[in-house]
Structures are given as structure tokens and as C-alpha cells.
Image (cartoon, rainbow, N blue to C red; front, side, top):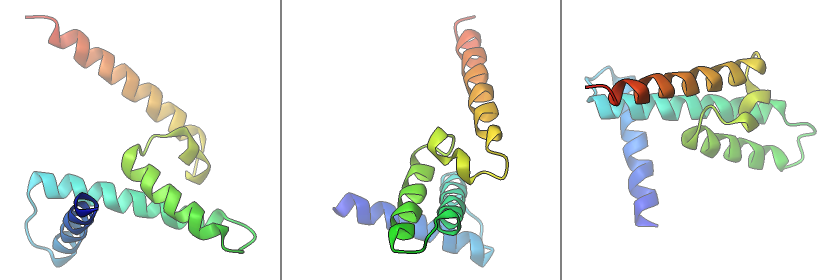
Length: 107
């Protein structure tokens, strides 16, 4: 559980540092972007859940964690302003990965 708390503390520190206007390291900047994106998914999941009977908290928590793990995950598509944009982003990411892998093989 210590790793979980340390990770959460690093996330909170990155978000607070960003909001303070202080300079962030590249690692902190990527971390705060990930946390903020995951938070947006969480808020959208809370708002999308109906009826409000307690399940919205599970939806919110699950969307937050899934957004941290993989913001392009298909299960988050219903939370996007354009649900098809998730598929487009996954295809673009796969294409980019192929291009990079092909480029690394050439010397």
C-alpha cells in the first residue's frame, strides 16, 4: 500500500505545483496531465450515471483509474464528447507506433 500512497502523493504534488504556477519537471508535467485527464473522465462518468443511486461513485472511480492506466481505452469512449474520437485516436496511436518501430529498425 505504500507504493499506492507514494504514487498518489506524487500525483497530488504535480497537480498542486501546476496550479501554483511553479515550474514543473517534465515528469511532473506528464503526471499532472495524466491526472487531470483522468479527473475529467471521472467527472464525465459521474455526470453520465443515471439514476444517482450510489453507482455513480463506482463509475467515477473506475473511469478515473482507467483514465490513468489507458486514456484511449474503449470503455471510456462513452464519456468523450464524440465517442468515435476514441477509435480514431487508437488507430492514430497504432499507426504512430508502427512508424516509430519501423524507423528504429533503420540505421
